[in-house]
Image (tube, rainbow, N blue to C red; front, side, top):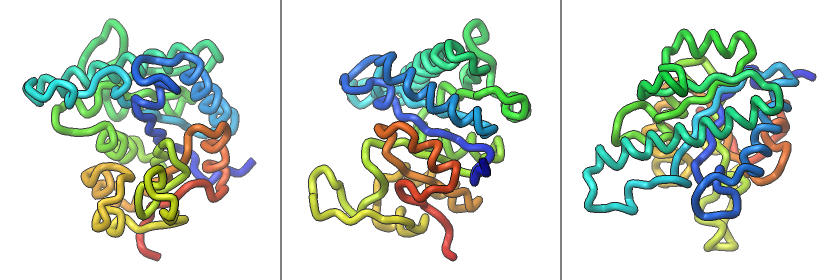
Length: 237
């Protein structure tokens, strides 16, 4: 099969790891994502993943805590999700590497751009944990940054809805879905695709963002094969 995107960066939120529960890691859900990633590898697609940690820790639940400390805890939480995904993938005989922006060599490799690219070239799924390694930056920004660093063809942003709308479709039934939208419109309208830093990074480097519903099995594969799933955030023209 011909694929449209040969190297992708898949962004999975922490909430995605919780499944139908509010907190923690729901392993059947993680195993489903692992099967979807294996499907991509069977097509020869090189896959990098950035994971969030909101299913384990969000700094806003402790408003009196120092922000930098809360963010550091959140970065560590993402590593738990990264290891869970790695375990599920390796049970499916998919070779993986977890690379972290905070050094913890007993459980993961430290992030080095050239090493990450080399792992992808060798067919390994690379899972990025610990965000950027700096407080005040979201894992959305990490996804944009890592995608650019490894020369990904696109960022695939997994969400609970089937694309980008002009308003929250869960609150407003009349909300209109965009098939395509420009980076500038996302920022000017304040649409919750990714945070503005992440969108600006992708805009600066003309890196497409595809926003899709992760609840439907097979959507990721359909996207890399060129099917019009979800919403494409792109440059003018």
